Image 1 (cartoon, rainbow, N blue to C red):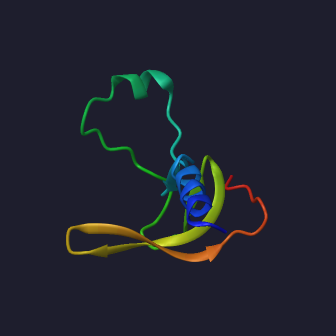
Image 2 (cartoon, helix red, strand yellow):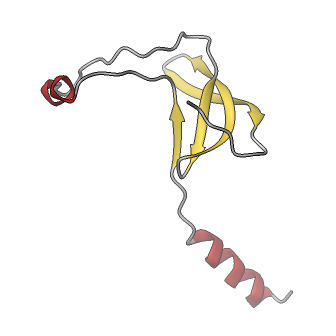
Length: 89
């Protein structure tokens, strides 16, 4: 592979956009209640602090993990990669 081909491949990869999401928990509420919420509102989730979380790429589950808190920073530690498409429901 020539240097030009490598640069073209890198440029093509840089144009790929992936949305990464982390699902910490779920909550159900009527739409009218959601619409009343303002900035800073707190939504109670159905998850506990030490429960497993899901990592999604373009809304497709790709990994499971756990929340890690270090000082004032929050991170996700990946504990398991998902090989087959699984449901998070």
